[in-house]
Image (cartoon, rainbow, N blue to C red; front, side, top):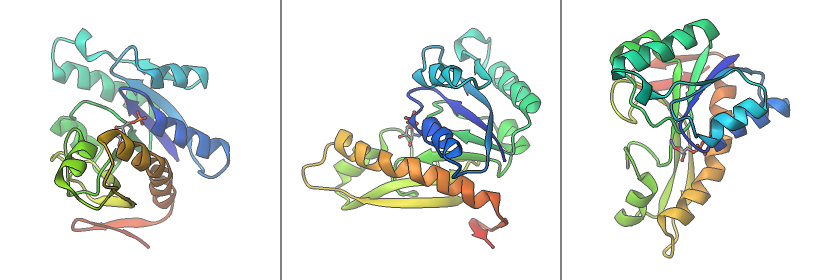
Length: 198
Ligand code: GRF
């Protein structure tokens, strides 16, 4: 299973995928890592691990479309089976999503469809939910809305802040992403919005 990883920051989900491969728990290879932020710690990590690491700074391109075209070009060359968004803070355009339909995964730090968008953990704390978690899903044209692959739940405590909840969720994110990829290594199909693992 050939994986591409797109990230913008810390890269702890990328690291979790890398470590699962190293431990032999995920039969996959990371064929390229792309960051839109030159200073992203995740891309430095990718270089340390000797992956094909590309910095494609969106600010260096004349338009959103031009940036995305270059990302697509790098991906076409790398020929991934799946593209893992791991803290990639750019919205993908319709041509991108169409080209890689049901091949782009994202991880979101809430139990979707609750709390899409930014600051999901703060939204959960402010709303007063007692349970939150994370969701690995395919990316479609709507924000944080595509077919769901894996979810993991965690309790929300009364004294939680966005930060303490985020830390609890992050532990589950790392396992959930690997679980989703392992499942995609076997047979699967889409039925409406549902992903069925046969
Ligand atoms: C994670 O909380 C993920 O759910 C969200 O962005 C964060 C990325 O963290 N999409 P990291 O860069 O993988 O450490």
